[in-house]
Length: 428
Image 1 (cartoon, one colour):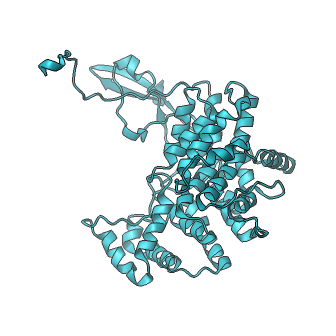
Image 2 (tube, one colour):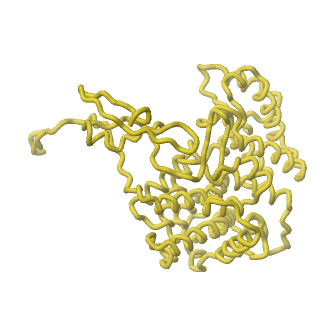
């Protein structure tokens, strides 16, 4: 195998492993034959050094601050594209032509309504139920309503299920919000854009007409684009793992939503906003900066730095500009936003933050924007799930079509008791 292999010396035996190269990114040592060759496994908690699949969808270089969807930089897509274009790109591999985009958008708009029986499903939840709890239940229940798109071996049914999930998620999310505030559900309208339709279903009431504000619509569309996909993160890996068993697509996406609900994953923008509210006013920032720098203080600045990006999060640059546009358009006067702007300036200039690469991330800005638009913090992760559904669906489709795909089965390092005999209860 020459230079294109890695040698492992284990137990006095040397074995060769092929080295695979992607189109870009680190080389990958193919250890699929490791157990057969050596009788040993690798130990990799969180799979942070393991490529779990081959993918053509999304590429991240955290050190360089790069995020590409099918090769296109995320900032170009967010600034120049629309969420429907990005959805098409992730699903089909290329940006659509004008007629392709119109056809795709029309298809999605024709699938936005929910089976009417599902509205009674919502009424089974308590009014104070967290919207993410409702999302998990309702999305999982879709497989009980749409039997004609659950055969994963039929490419046509997979496509229909993909369209349904992308189209119905805004309706499901808006209904979760309406239910939590005791307002009537608002049906979708086919003459509005994907994002405009969602805003109307969320914020309109029967008592008056609702006009979609183009600045707010554009900001929400950008937020959706920036959260559309992010490689093999926890929720995406969950969707793939669930799908590897042959589970239907609605169940797989419900599993992804459940994983995203975790505060370490989807709840970061809510945590960032809560931190800004805790600081409260600009004059208290120095006190909290001092606490953040103190190793013995448990306080942590939320919304800064990123596990993957060791540089400025490319999504944050777009969000920064959008945050300014939204706050200016709405004319919102809130000390929380003053705190956010001041804290941002400190983080970009203070040597402590710069050296540790604690740049404001996408969660820092998106929480500020969503709050200004009028979303409660309980809806933040729901919006994340809405946007990420496109990525999940694209990843699921890719996995189903992959001839190398097999049911996920991680191994373990067992440290429990060795074999022992059962002792009767009277003798213990």
